[in-house]
Image 1: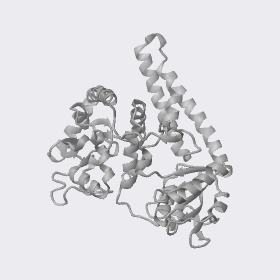
Image 2: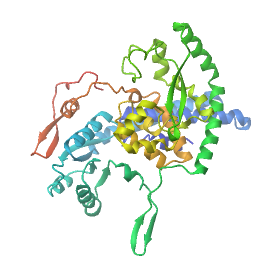
Image 3: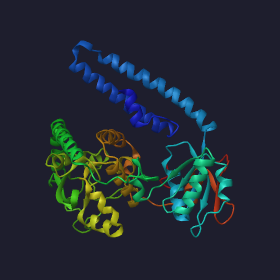
Image 4: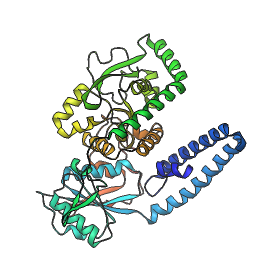
Length: 432
């Protein structure tokens, strides 16, 4: 069981910072210990004392922490993966920014190669030969993608990553067939089968019932504190949209002042939003304000896992911007989802949409279980509460905080050069 948790939470330090990896190790061991306690409770014959479990937890965590720290220090010096990013300037720079802001990997951007007027010349192959991985942006032309991908996967032992377009999500793990002598891929539908919907609904009923029973004391405590705080209503209710565009009344614990949207209208809360109450900040931080949505799940208006439930005006706005957004409404909205667990509040509209469509395309019970376990992790992660209105910085500014300088080779190639200095690095306001 512990090995499964290690796999789900990805405790490998080859793809994460040391502290991020140890956070995953701690949570995995904690859940495994809780599981062992529950097994001992229901099967008394195999009772292991709580002291033994606690000592075992401490010893395992300490030994793993020491081993991973030493291995991480070694990798930081010897095994940095060099990366080349290719695409139109705006998209390439945005992808590079994500590399510096994520910090959950042992990768280093070596070159950024800009596609100009839809063209990438053969000189890019010389730069690809100097790196270990290549990342291609979504807006790179098909001609350039084909040229680069064929060179990487056919001629070189170089891993190639691609930010997908919407239609490309449909061919993930596609079934292969042929028509006479022509190779064909089956493009999967962005819908759940009747059987999948039945199983998902059954699990939703079980999870919501058990969840409401277990969290009942939390409901009572939160209701009393919210009521005593300003004598306002305990719950916040708002019309949201779920599968097939159906509207429903979403329920949450009220975390803002009474009539918070009376003057501003329905706007998303930002960092240090004055409308959020003191207790509201606490319950929002650990997602307790979402608990009443279990009632929506039990009623069949939502699912426990699915795309985020949006307001009516948000859905209309997003569909007007991008027609493919309507495919997101092929499933019920969820309390938690793939986009929420791998992204944050500042994740772009396009990225969130791709995550949601990928979830629909790859749905399985196991995928739902993994997302639920991911949710436990992000509750305690600072990345999960990143605000969409945080100040934006240029690639040059962010790179400088990480000790890199952008050195242009020409109009379409930039080298990210490591700057060695004894002085303390310049840090931007709010930079981590």
